Image (cartoon, rainbow, N blue to C red):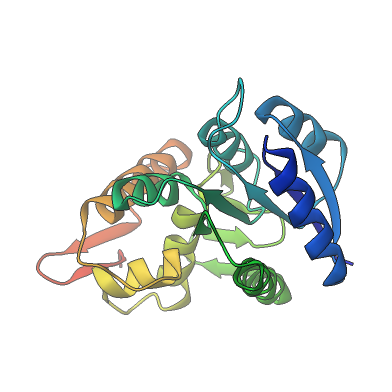
Length: 224
């Protein structure tokens, strides 16, 4: 049974989500603040987190950063913030999906099932090796020339995964974005460019090899 952690300081919303998800066959834990969420995640095993942003004390963004620093646990943000900038910022931090309040519970359930299917598919083949790079999908780790690469965000991990799956292919920015973020490309390149830059810096910390090549006017590929 998949286990969901619901993080929302509104007890009515938290309780409603728990009741609805348990009717759908999920097991649920509840947290009402950011610090309580991080404590539960350190003590208990979960398959996905539903995360509000406006939390007392430790913000949802801070919780998300802490989750991403430790691995690839799927996180769906559920927030009343509905402007594009807020969504882009949170997705850039590593959220897997974003649901705006008020929401239909059927939509939340559908999005949860999508993320759990993706996670299951990713774990079906846990190891990917290309040149001096190796990805462990199960543990969300990367090594370069045998040295461990600092923890990647989910999007950084998926960018590298895509390039490694097709090492001779040049990928356009829209193709990389849609794979890494798993949503339609909206023509905004800054977010992707920042993630590529951060990925290069983390790889550089493990090995002096330049792994990612920019193909001007097209996109990126693994460097030959």
